[in-house]
Length: 293
Image 1 (cartoon, helix red, strand yellow):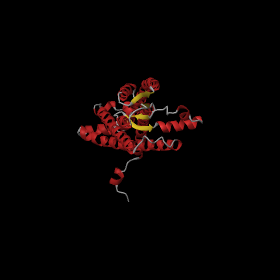
Image 2: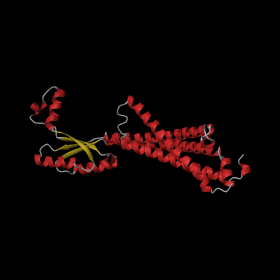
Image 3: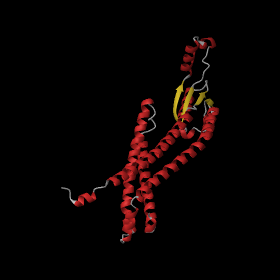
Image 4: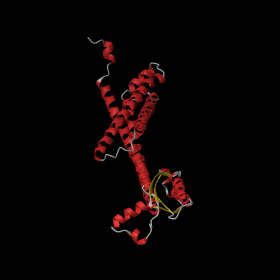
């Protein structure tokens, strides 16, 4: 037979309903915030990838000493703005061009008219028009380099398009974020509101305000942890479902990135849960008993 003390410690149906409702509300809010973070991260990643598609090609002089050519190639390869290089020698380029044309222009000309070329993929930090202009000037000064070609017009168009999109997207994200925070705050306030008479009763019997706040703050902390974990699980599930349609979609999401996302959601859940709870409890502590109805 269940003892009276065990029955009194068992949560009531209303408390369970309140806990579930609060957790679901906070989880949905954190899910929205998490999706905004995911979209922002993907947008930044795709921007960097798009910038890096604007390659830089370094053409070397044809009549240059092999040793000097090798030194020039090494200087280009170790340039601080270069991420990776692909070297195409003149002989290989000529054979490929002859295969496409179907005739040997080298036999007709008597020499190879093409130059050795290095195709450069630049680092994301060096893929802006300003940084690339400086890098190109630096590469052109290398002995043995005949010309440096880069897609300045394409990169400029990409940057102008990004600038036009960034402002409206940030504004939209800010609106969604404010709505999410307001929703979470109202959810916590309703949870505390349902127990406002308990707060005032404890205050009237002489309980210290800190002793009154403590159980509510612990509850807000637990709500935040559980809601953050549920929101992360939902986001992870969404990303996995999307990956079935595009196998490369999750490439930017390394375990480190997912761990950071989980940490952010847990931190935000605890922050909003505890702060909103503290604000709501303090509000009812300051009210008179006759104003609680």
